[in-house]
Amino acid sequence: MPTVLRFGAYRVVIYPNDHRPAHVHVIGCGHEGIFELNCPSGPVAARENYGFALRELTRIAAVLLENVGLLCRAWREIHGIG
Image (cartoon, rainbow, N blue to C red; front, side, top):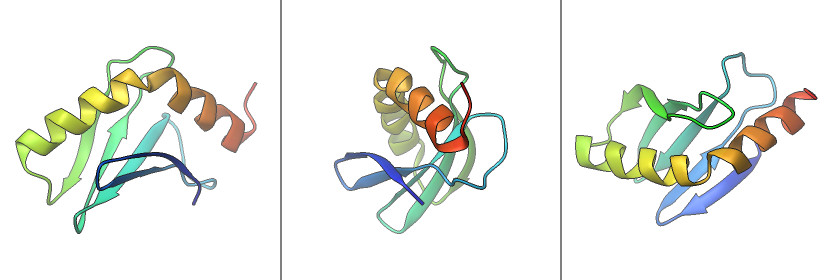
């Protein structure tokens, strides 16, 4: 599971054998969330949440949106697309 971004206490990972649509798993503080990227430019949307408070989800989504280009490129590279 390649870590493609770190910020604060969070780790953003993309699983190589995962399915479409392009999404990332954010892990940190004992919680996990899955965010759809809506490549190539967002918006980033929380799809699943396992423990994050709404305030954390909003903050995480904002950071992911700031990095959506990098995350979409990483998704394509990891999955051998384009």
